[in-house]
Amino acid sequence: MKSWSLLALRITIALLVLLWGIDKIVDPAHAIRVSDTFYRGLLSQGGLMPVLGILQVGLALLAMVGLFRRMVDPLMLLVNLGSMLGVWRSVVDPWGWVLEGTNVLFFPSVIVVAGCLVLIAFRDQETLVLDRRRATPG
Image 1: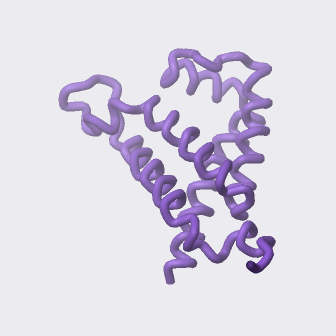
Image 2: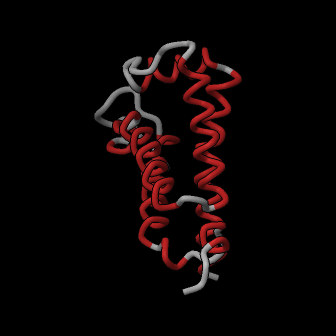
Image 3: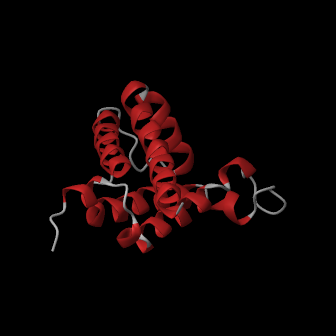
């Protein structure tokens, strides 16, 4: 059960990052609006979005199959942590009782970050990943 649960967590977190990456590739204008709204336009360059999207898709695919986890899992944590920080108001005050511009639908970003931490913490217990399959015994 633990192996399947970790695999489900790995795949769903990777799917989220995959969707964000695809969005940057197919609709860079939307990705720029997101960057402008939540990240103060930090990466709001039209030509940059498809490149970031391709990198994000590659990272998500590696994460999904469990390759190079020692490098990929911390990068996934950083990507998701960055996303969570962009909507921090919604994590702190999901209903907007004190802070303006919050949305309870962004609260799960903290759960995604926690899931990334679980994958890092239980890396040695995952069995349904390609890293484990390609490792040589001994």
